[in-house]
Image 1 (tube, rainbow, N blue to C red):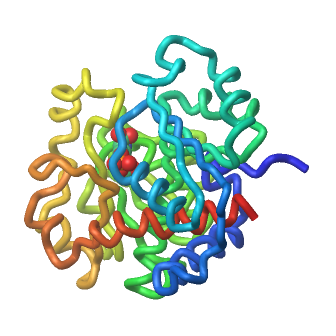
Image 2: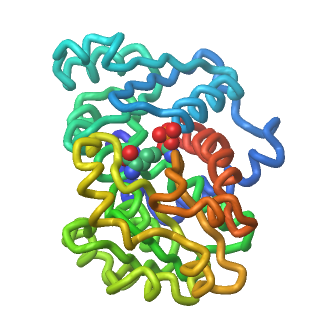
Length: 297
Ligand code: CP
Ligand code: NVA
C-alpha cells in the first residue's frame, strides 16, 4: 500500500476531503468525540516562520492526547546542510506523522519520498492545503455549503491561490482570479482546472457577485527582497469596501493571515462584519485535528 501523504489537496479524493471538513465541524462542537492518540507524536519540521499552523498542530495533538516535536532550521541539523532525505529517514523512524513547512515544493516531495510515515504540507512555495481545509470549513459553517459558490481571488497568484484552484475542483465552486501580469498562478494548473478556475482581467470583474472574496499578502515568505517591486505591481489589487460593494450582498471576506492592513486589504474590510478571518484562523486547529485523525487511522 502506498503511504497517504497530504502534500496538496489532490492527494485525497473529493469524498475524503469532504469527510475531513465535516469531521472538523463536528469536532469543534464535540471535541470529546475525537480519537485518542496517546503515544502518537507529530514532528513539525519548519524552515519558515509560523504562528497559526504551528499552534494549530501542537494544540490539536495535545488535545488528542499525543505530543508534537517542533524543529526549525535554527536548532536542527537541517540548518547546517543535513540532506532532506536523511532528515526524513531519521525523523520518520521516531514519529507517527510529520508536517513540513518549506520553500521549494520539490523539497517536500523529496521528504515524503523518504518518509516512513505520512507527511503533511504545512506550506510550501506552491501550495498551502491545510489552510484550505479551514477556509472551506469556515464557509460551510457560515453558509451551509460551498458547492457552486462564486469565489474571487484578488492579488498574487501564490501558494494560497494555487490551493484555491485545487479546492475549486475538489469542492465544486467556481474561482475567478484577478492578478497583475507576471503574478499569475501556474499556467498548467489553470489549464487542468479550466472548468472551475479562470483568470479575469481586473479585481472588480473577479469580485462581481462573489459569495467569497479572498486575498493574501503581496510578498510571501521568501519573496521579501521583492517587496517594494511587488507593492508597485500589486497596488491596484487591494480588497477595499468599494470592491466588496460589487460582490454579493452577503459576501464573506477571508485571508489566511498574517495580513497587512493598507496593502492587500483595507482595515475597514478585514475588520468589518463581512470578514470571517478569526473564525477561519480558529478553524485551523479543528481542521488539522480532523486531518491528523484521518492520517493516523
Ligand atoms: N495562515 C498561516 O499559515 O499562518 P502561519 O504562517 O502563522 O502559520
Ligand atoms: N502566501 C503566504 C502565506 C502565509 C501563511 C506565504 O507563503 O508567506
